[in-house]
Image (cartoon, rainbow, N blue to C red; front, side):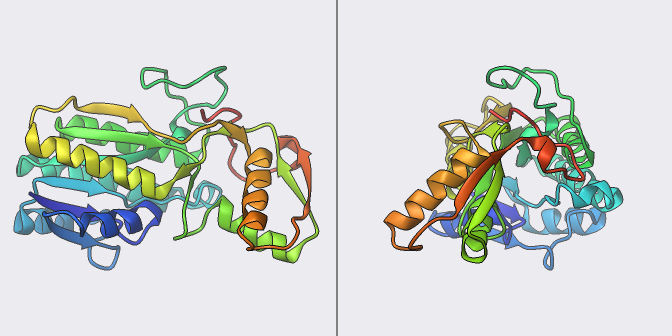
Length: 263
């Protein structure tokens, strides 16, 4: 089994790279320097040269607010990139595993989002990720699209690291309490993708399609922050936590609209 990993230096890609090295497979792990997925010719050459059985795309433009002013770059990475990979994968009969996001939905639904729910992204980031999904579906029938949400880990920038940093700088913090989702450890996303690769290895006729994967329980950002600070104190990372104030989304305006429900 030969596996090509893109975005190996990203939040999930970091764990994929580490965990894939423990498997008896031939791995080619690429960061942006090794492979810019928005470069169709470079992608085609890399795939034709390596001839992977499976491609895992962990590369993405994830700056949600900045995407509102950098739409061209967001679409190059999140839409053109997956399309290039899908076309290249289909030519060599490889499966493509692609990471997507809850931002493809409006976030207004009551209850859990299912894979069959209608998509309706609110901002550039979500629209670009949805375009990437559509390209994968169109050009590579052998695909798994894994939508996840609220990803965190030791590597990269995320809510947990931001809260720990702010706790050292401020005695009081205001955190949004009317947005809900399932915090998801990046290492678990990686582990799940690798389980899917293992299934592909033994059964080429997998149930291809779109799947949701995120953590539980579903909490607000404010509740998540409370848990982070409690755990940090129990582990001796901080002596005392800042005073938390639960606020509404309207009190914390951002360039991109956020989902009320990402569950």
